[in-house]
Length: 330
Image (tube, one colour):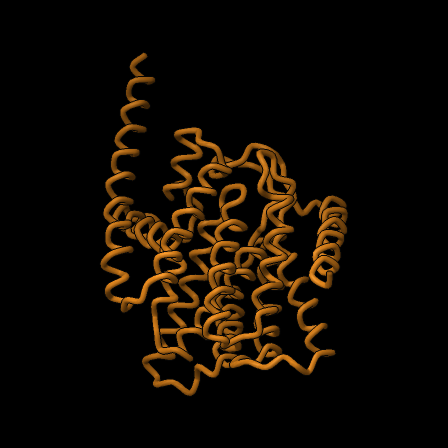
């Protein structure tokens, strides 16, 4: 019953945001780089920082919360990255300004999970890992449903893992699950009512990374990184492709596999989003139900996915180019 009340509050909060967004024209207008054709409300992902406020409010009245994380320091970090991301949704900020606030937020994240007690090389790894995943999530947020569904798969998996190892309070994972379900109600549609925006992609990825990083620190097992395998493969290989083509990797583009499928092959946003989430769900199920080392999982799960991804994308690009040539000749 309590979770139902929280869900209703989140729905009402998002409806109120829609009214504000329409009044102040916080919208996403389609352009040649977009995968949508209708003007849509931007920043619907504000539901995640709103959810955080709900969580911290309950936390302040409940002394039973106990885990290996400082929720208040984490909360400050996510508020910082949410505010700077929301401002960036409204007006384009300088990359230098963004990176300063991102570095500050990530520092708070690492402090909240006691990462600064680790050796210097591990701290450096966590900075690279966290900032890399944050930007990967932002790059991948381009079609209806993909951020919400993919996040839901990650969070549900983390919920079951946490039920087994009991590192964090389950509510810390349940709350963003509720937020993802509410967001999907408005976003997982042929004509989405809202997009997540930078505020959504950065805040939910920040939340998920915190859980994964906490698991890694307190178990010493890096396999939890693989709960984000699909995004990782698409993001890293697309960056390498763009570097090979001597493109600025921070400029907007349409080279991700999901973008080619939606924009060039005219596949359904909802279908492609579902497939990305479903493939990740299968990977997560293998990891949860078996017991191998990180290197073994990488060999049997990630390596085949990389090979399949490259082969399929090369085939897809070849087909697209052939069709364009045929159309030009006609």
